[in-house]
Image (tube, rainbow, N blue to C red; front, side, top):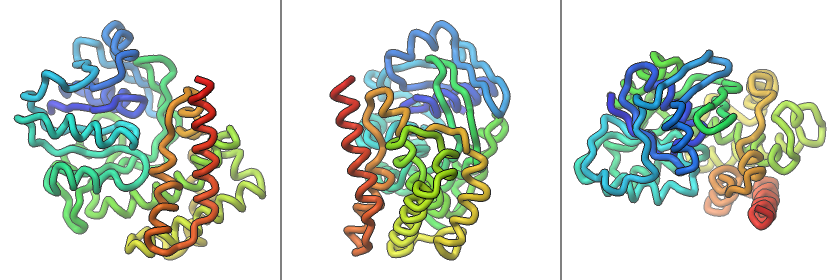
Length: 318
């Protein structure tokens, strides 16, 4: 396949490396600071799934899509931060000869709805990724933890798009276990639960996920976030694999945290690099939906406010 990965940070570079090493033609839209290193050394992935390398001649590198509006791709993977979604979609929509599916592989919720609004239902897919990626240096990404396979699906519940099947097969063959599903909203909501409970609190306290589970006070906060998030999702009409928040907490503490115990929150890494965070696609999203649907979310509101404060401090000091 000819694949475009738009917004190639840690996740995008890792997936680009795996797919290119497996024989696919891969183009990356990525920040200029990464271009020189990747042009020189290519892409390398290391970590829990083994070592992979894609030489530079196998990868196209572009800082933006200007001048490439006539390019055709089989699929586009959107891996930007959530706050860059609108700008990315504007560029993608401007590709006047490309009508391929676009897959949001981003954190948080609400991204698939933005794709559907801008590109239409037929072109819009999403993938739930619950694997940890960290850039050790430009062009070298370490896969640190993984709690489950990638799930890929479309906008219509009960239907598995052909593009979802094709992408899941390609990713699995390249070394990243993936499955196509007929309801992508369920795993997206499940990831929202996981991210809301761990990511903001870990960023505020500056610790990895396992440390949060080892302390009674942080566990109490995570329990409240899970209760609030579960209530909001249920009120929105969403479904999850668990009947209630208590059932989810058993899986959360017994399986999910142990599998990702040493992972450092992406939000913490953003703060350390003086970058904006995705708080408004996580606890900020839950708080906003809570206000919309009349569900109280005091803990999510509080954590979102604290992260925004730390984000502003980090950017001033950067």
